[in-house]
Image 1 (tube, rainbow, N blue to C red):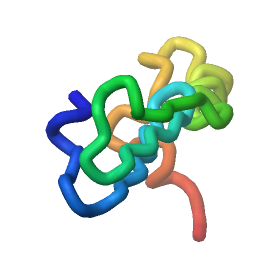
Image 2 (tube, rainbow, N blue to C red):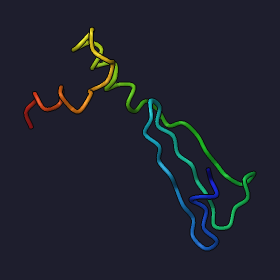
Image 3 (spheres, one colour):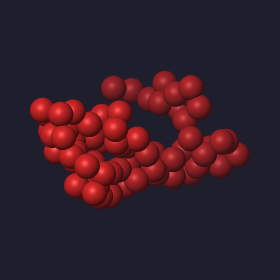
Length: 73
């Protein structure tokens, strides 16, 4: 809900990293019609696709970070 993040005196930019990443720009004191929001490209859908490839019988995501914990930094 944009009201939760709106501020009377400060601009805010929100980044949502779901399956597809998107940005929301809330100008200070903006109304709902003044809000700007758009998709920027893939986000977690890439990792989910890799999880499905590495573990085809798994849930389609890295449950509890199990796959990531097998890697090396």
